[in-house]
Image (cartoon, rainbow, N blue to C red; front, side, top):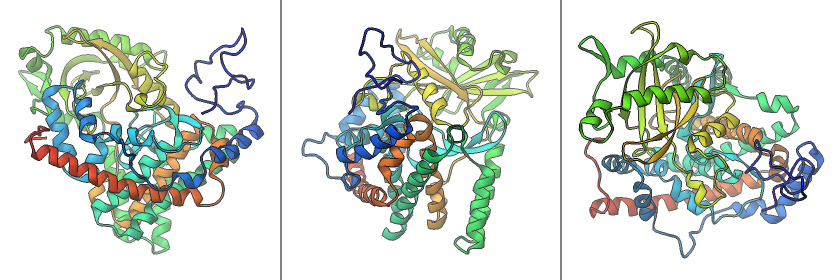
Length: 498
């Protein structure tokens, strides 16, 4: 990969007066940002380092490690009693396993060709990590919604993880070989097309571009008018968008909170939801956790963007540990109940532990001291709009271990596609939306001109990635079989309730 260069084209660190731009550290630049011709030339030259056809297919190296051992290694930093829940969730289907196997795939991607063009990448860009949510302006937008693994790295890794996830999900749904290939080609083609559009666009247009709910509706309606989808698909889309608008703090409040002795409390539902006082009683948390949380909220306030913030008008009420996701299970995640003007004015935040990205084993480590900040800054760079409450904080636990967290609203008009309801044409439309959304994120967070020139006008790259996705789905099936065998043998413990 090329050296990191500054605005003048010189490698950073060369010359006595060389300085590192803190906003660009970790992103390798092939040419000065204001030299669009040089950036385009660098993109074309990258084809010599990694021809677009070199991305085709996947063959595991002879010394490929044990995928189960990687999962066991991850478990050493997680809450022991929650690890069996993670394994149980991963064991439901090959797609659920894929969701939890970000480290396994990162290790595999580290052996594949790369162009040498880097961007801030998601690191876990599977199809379930895209969805709709509310912007601060209260618009419903479609974007990437998970950044736990974000880090500067090869943009191709995100594209390959997205493509493989579509192939794995298509197999789970029983789609034909042709339907799965069409879905993957649609996603990668949309990525390439959007990247080329972004490269040609005016600078601010490329940075501000986004996909919103109205455009999603319009696309589905055009498909209906062309008889490529049925009325049921239109209804499913409308229902999903309408449902997402109901997923806010008020709805979360109604599902999670009860009144006990005249006081609001997050209701226990062990092992998935455990109130803080229950953890204190078991010696898993200190008695001063509520006081510590109030201090954390005050300190976290300094990481928010606004000089005055609505958080200042809320008071702490209660908190509980909550199991979330698939791959994240076992990391520490809290839900925190706050109150504004009264009990009918709730806010629920989620404080989620941020460990080192799985990519850091294979790429330079994050230049951020705190992993919560790594997640937040990566999200702010890649998303078209970010949560008003998105911030970070470092905490020392009752065990004396220092841990990093990022904090956000638990729900704010959030919604994602239900894999179990996907039909081939609707899944293809969703794949296109994911592909172009990923391109918009990389266009902001990398060199859109160089990437676009590398991709070119033909579908050569698209076809190569489709071959990779099919082969890697075979690998995922083999890894899932090894995982289920480890569960059956008792090597991996699984929970009965998950």
